[in-house]
Length: 218
Image 1 (spheres, rainbow, N blue to C red):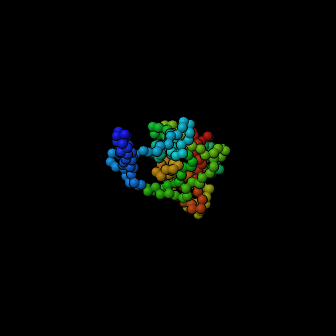
Image 2: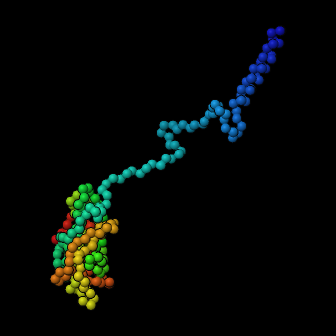
């Protein structure tokens, strides 16, 4: 009986110690854990083949290819086309890639007559007209040395009366490749009979089509 009487307080002490240990690991709501204490973090595992609820942004694929041709790697010339007819010259505006890598062109060049030492514009800029071969606008890739051309019609000054034309001697053509703000220059001074060197506000003596690979057919 003596030994049994001693067991009761020992069991009570053990129960008390367990309760103290449990209370010491708890923290008040919103309070940070004590230094050195460990906290459990709930994790969610995704089974193989399952779709996670959170979506991640995926970068679009990088599309590589030739960049647009710039005025710095192009030269402009006149050539090709059907030639003279009905007081017009049906020729071609040619842009050649003088760079060391391929580049692309798309659409219509800008063209106008210029005159004087300052290169001021004479008359209206070229009007845009669809190519007469049934083709459509498309991107043209130019390898180094290759050229693209657009049909260019130049109306001769003799078509207009002098009162309407107000002829002005010109130096040549200013050309803007598609998308470019730096101009190229084609020497084409007024000669006997003249090109369309009219200072007209109501109509243009130049019309231009869109660029296609190669020279204009004759």
